[in-house]
Amino acid sequence: TSNMPLPSLPAKAAYLYLNNPGRRNALSVSVLRDLRNQLHKHLTSPLTGRLLVLPPFKPSVLDQLESGTEDLRWLTDASEWARQRDGLPNVLVLRSEGPVFSSGHDLKALASASHDEVKEIFSLCAEVMSLIRRSPAIVVCPIQGLATAAGFQLAMTTDYPIALASTQFCLPGMGLGLPCTSPSTAVSRRLPPALAYRMFASAE
Image (cartoon, rainbow, N blue to C red; front, side, top):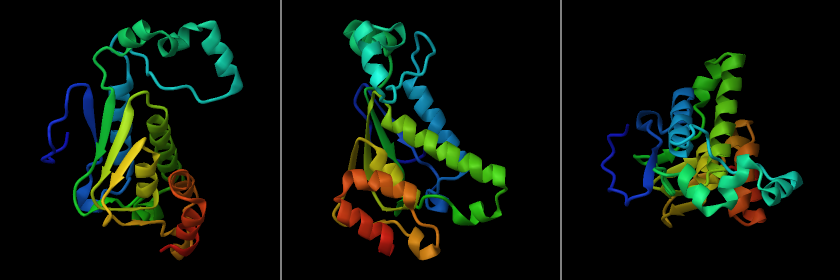
């Protein structure tokens, strides 16, 4: 639960809270677990207890949709969609507070983490990004402050990121000897390739 003084949302909309302002909203293990749990809560059918996410695309999915496969019927039948998703939000709003939207991974924490802990952090990060990309509820992201590295990736992974002209973004990895390859993928979907590459290569 967040203590942020956020405006009330209309019916069928809900917040996702990135709540770690004391550490520049870094994507620590606890923060990523919390985001995953929030996503599961808002994407799990109250009727069946099943996590309702869009299937990853592959040609076989088209055949399954055409044949009305039971697992995917909620995607092709409006009444089944409404039945399975009754009580779930249609819009999710990803928010944080403070001058930094998210600084990405906490490099000091990563440096002192064990091999298994580092694997868990990156696995959780990939899972959260995937849940956002595959969410049947639109994910909106007002970016109120600096977004860097995986924090930049998180914002750009949403369906509708919103930023002021003064909002700053950065892929700092190249300057640290840790190129931001994964964040660059999400960024390149939103920005012209030349600009995305410039940010990746120059760490501006």
